[in-house]
Each structure stands twice: as C-alpha cells, then as structure tokens.
Image 1 (cartoon, rainbow, N blue to C red):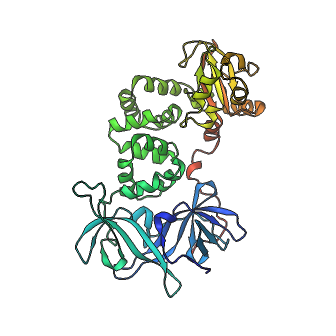
Image 2: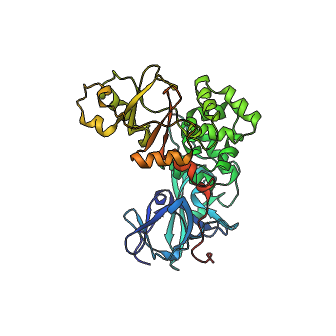
Image 3: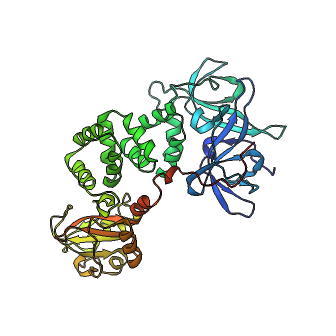
Length: 420
C-alpha cells in the first residue's frame, strides 16, 4: 500500500469519495467491516462497505485500498460489484458499534462509543486500535467527559447489546442526504433500526421513508404507535403518503387517515381515489400556486424556499381563486427563466405561458412521459374537466412509477466472482 495517515477515525471516513487509479470516482464509503475475535486482541479491518452506482453497496477489501488521504480513498480499481451481504462473523463499525454501552476497564467508567479508530499494524493489516467513549452528561454539562482509549481498555464491544442507543449514529445520518441515510437504515439489524427510527424526528423520518423500499416503509410504519405514524405521514409528500397507505392493511390505513389532520388526510384520500398508474394517482397537490395579480417578486420568493423540490420550483401555476387544489381555473404557467428576466414589480399574469395544454388526471404514465419530453418540462399540470388545477406530476414522480417496483433495493447483475 501507499502512504496512509497513521490513524483514521471511522465516523470521519464515512461519506468520503472512493476513486480508482485514473481518478474516476467509483463510490462513497458507508461503513467498515471488521472481524472481532475477543476484547483482548485488536479486530482486523476486513474492508469497506462502499456505495456505488444505483445506490448499491459492495465490499471493498482493505487489500484493494491503496491510499487514504486528503478526504479521499483510493483503490486498485479492481472491485467486485456483487452486492455486499454481511456474514455472521462480521461486525459493521458504524451500524453496530457506535452508541454501544461499554465500560473502561481501568476505572469502571461507563459510557457510549462515539467513534473508533483504525491503524495499520506491523503486519500491514488494518486493525481497530482506539475507542472514543463519552460519559453521560452530569450536572450542568451538556456533554459528558470524553475518553480515547486502547481497544483492550474497553469491555462490552463484543457483546450483542439489544439496548444499543442511536445518538452518534444519528449524528452521522443527519449529515447525509435522505436517500443515503435511507440506505444506511435499510442495512441495519432490526433492533438497531428500531432505535434509530425512534430517535429520528418526524420530519427527518418522513424524508427517509420516502427513499426506502416499500417493504421497509410498511415494516417501519407498522412498528410505530398510531399517533406517531399519522404525524410522520403528515410530514411526507401527499403522493408518497398515499402510496404508502395503499400498501397497508385496510383497517390500519383507515385508522391512520382518521388520526391525520383533516386537510392532510383529504389530500391523501383524493390521490387514492384515482386509478393506479394514472397522472392523478402520482401527482403532488402542493405546487407553487399564485393569483394573476401577484408580483414576480412574490413568485421568486416562493420558489426560493429551501425545502421546495427543484422540479416544483421550476414553474409557478397561476390560477383564479381558490388557490388550494382543486383551484379556480388554471390560467397558465410561469417558467422560472421567464420570471428571472422580468422586473420584480411586474405582475406574474404578464409572464404566463398559455401554449402548453395541461393533462387530465386519467392520463397514463406513457402520456405523462410523452408530454414532459415533448415540451422539455420537469413538471406537468393536471386539471379536471372544468380546468381547475388538481396538482402536478414531476419528473421524479414519473420515474418513481416507471422504474420497477423494487428499484430501490434491486441488485444489479453481478459482474465479478464473490469475495472469498
């Protein structure tokens, strides 16, 4: 191997890009795989769990890692693209060691693991050498005292602890995009996943649920109490919530809809009333809707909102009152490029594009795709027979429904032999 830093901390390694010898990024680090024999011997680091194209996870042996430096990991480029599957004798550092309750052998101090360091031994193998432990907060301190100790100075890391917390894993997850966090949660053991889900706030859990495979969504929701499950569904986009509720047993679905806020439940019920695989079933009822006498400055203020998806920020939909779907008559759309070129005091009604016909809620997936492709759009307006705006179908909504049902968790064809 080439030169390495003398010590690498796992929590700082997660998320680093992985490059091949010619400088092409091939993935990101998501975890470390180690073999723990006993608390008296340093565990050997077997390799990295890397996320590659298609959000698939593969195993990268440490023998393929040539350098870890300057916020990057370099490999030989000869990677086995078979999906990673954890073996019984293997432990995931991020997924299974962070937040574990341990005891420092010299003092009897009890704390939780918040990081683990690896170093290269004289044999050139990488081993876990240090454990970073945090005591519980005491008195007026917001955080307890921290200790970084030798692996052999800690008891409890080889024990399968079902009461393992989630504080430090949550810190790592909160640094990730929802899709990346969902991938980590998907791979966690059941007890660990339950602890993480319990600790996530409702909004973050909603974001993550939208990125998980359907079976994971259902399993997580069914293990929440009904009140919290309803709160999480309210935080999800209405189309995603409708898809998830449709996968639940009818009695459970009815209970959760009854617990949701009436307006949120009404949006979900309306989407569920449309036939599957139609524009109505996959639309979102929350685009940017403005009256014709709003100014362009007001329109730009709406599309600047940080939590607005890029596909929804690309156009403003101008309607007669009421402005909640189903609205008054749709007058036209205003493209973001047009809004940026006009004086801020101009009325948005003066910047309308009326040349694109909207679609009916009965439009098929193929018809929506053809419409978006024909007019080079990232969203399509959906109206009823009276021309009232019901919602919009975005290109990401369309892809969600055009891809295979299990696309989020689908393994691509193996391109190399299994790891030995």
